[in-house]
Amino acid sequence: MRVATWNLEKPPGNKGARQDRQREWIEKTRADVWVFTESHVTVSPGPDFTGVCSPHEESGQVWTAIWSRLPIEPLVATGDPTRTACARVTPPRGPPVVVFGSVLPWLGSRWEGKPSAGGVAFQAALSAQRQDWAELRRRHPDCEFILAGDLNQDLSVKHFYGSHANRAALRAALQATGLQCLTAGQADPARVQTQGQWAAVDHICASEGLAARVVGPATCWPPGDRPDKALSDHFGVVVEFG
Image 1 (cartoon, rainbow, N blue to C red):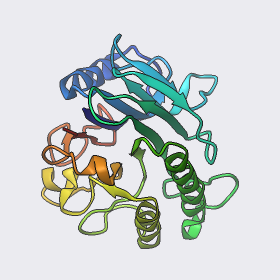
Image 2 (tube, helix red, strand yellow; image 1 turned 135 degrees about the vertical axis):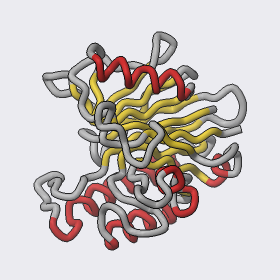
Image 3 (cartoon, one colour; image 1 turned 135 degrees about the horizontal axis):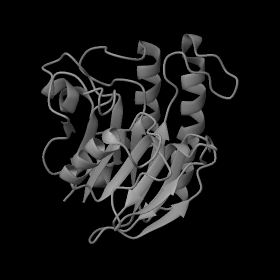
């Protein structure tokens, strides 16, 4: 099972030169489960995928969309209903997986009226989502768990984006809910690909049982020492599970 996440930087729809180029990379990645962030309701990985998304704006923009070629069932995520989506996916082998797609506040972003300064918005949104992760794990004890999306915080070897306080809060939230970030530290695929010039802020995290089934390192695209802004201002990342 291959799981990928990519911030598509608010495409206006499914048509256009940028969308065509994004689709080429989506097809090359061959993921079974996608978490798109800053996406559009018309953007799908292909006809064999079924999607679940956060509420869309009048323009069709959505903060988070989960797409799966495997059987998928929508679940409710309540702490941050605008920027998150959740689904239960059934892989061909092993237990079902709860997939939680997320966008956490970026630097300068308010959340629920809370200011960005001092990490107030980030940590408030993180606290709400952390409660969702814990509640979903409690309600679905038969499932493994994946958190994926644009977390707007590096967890790399050295500081790149976000803040030290937000990094500490994110690490604590993951630890408290039994999740391991597969795109952090030495495993950060953006750091590896760019020889330390960049770091991932889009992450894939997994419960302990699923993390033990990772096949090879996380990888990212497109190639190069920085994202290709003609595609997106973010690298995409993918992890494979055996």
